Image 1 (cartoon, rainbow, N blue to C red):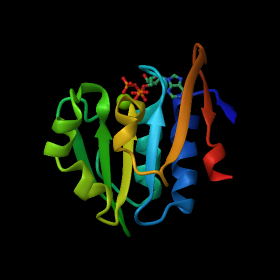
Image 2 (tube, rainbow, N blue to C red):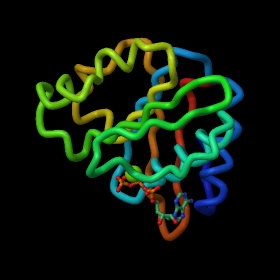
Image 3 (cartoon, helix red, strand yellow):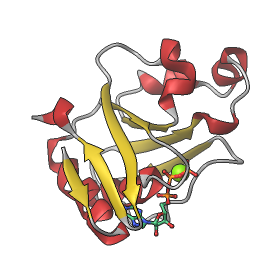
Length: 138
Ligand SMILES: Nc1ncnc2c1ncn2[C@@H]1O[C@H](COP(=O)(O)OP(=O)(O)OP(=O)(O)O)[C@@H](O)[C@H]1O
Ligand SMILES: [Mg+2]
């Protein structure tokens, strides 16, 4: 658990975490709007060697980035309306495809998340402070 004092710090935390990521890992991110989930994914993708632009897949539901060793599948469950819709975009196949899957608003369909997933919690403390719980990685 640590307090990030800026968007850049949250991004750097994602970049550092990339060192611990292996193919098949599933990262389930939870936290309110603006809590820093996408910011964290930007850093993570960079740390995995991707030069792709990372934006919230709120409207397209899924973004794919190419890291230097692994593909990254970036989901956002916020706009997904049902488990059926999630299945329709191929979530179950991609999650087991050997890349890195990272999911914003994972708690909206927690039942779809495979059990070895690592849950990461983001909380807005105040202003630019965000509490980030990475305890599933220690
Ligand atoms: N410590 C911090 N960490 C992350 N973002 C911060 C921090 N301080 C301020 N911010 C700002 O908060 C916003 C976080 O946005 P971000 O898109 O990462 O949130 P999110 O959790 O993905 O939200 P959403 O649920 O809408 O997808 C950005 O505008 C960022 O600049
Ligand atoms: Mg987001």
